[in-house]
Length: 100
Image (cartoon, rainbow, N blue to C red; front, side, top):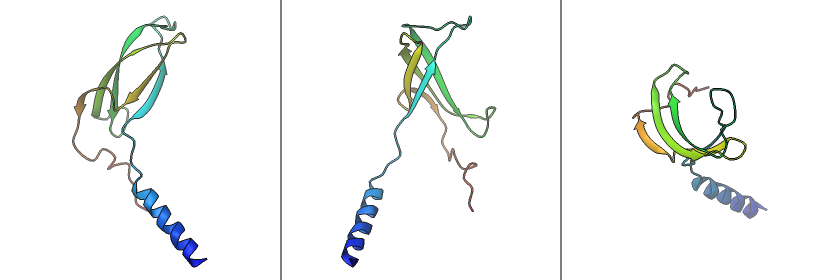
């Protein structure tokens, strides 16, 4: 029984060692024009910005995507796999981490 728990602990530790953060983040949106009508089956450009701290905070990451909407106006993209134009150096989440 002791060997079973030892083996289980070793397996749990080895699995967590191989865990990695994802390279991208999935993003979906429904595209509408200025008249609030769906933009269907058309190519659109998107700019995705990640801000630090609040919606008025500084831009820490900025990229663009060229995607095509489907018949429902839906686009799917992956943040982190676009054309990157700006990436600020530094600890992006430093202000969000709290120690208890």
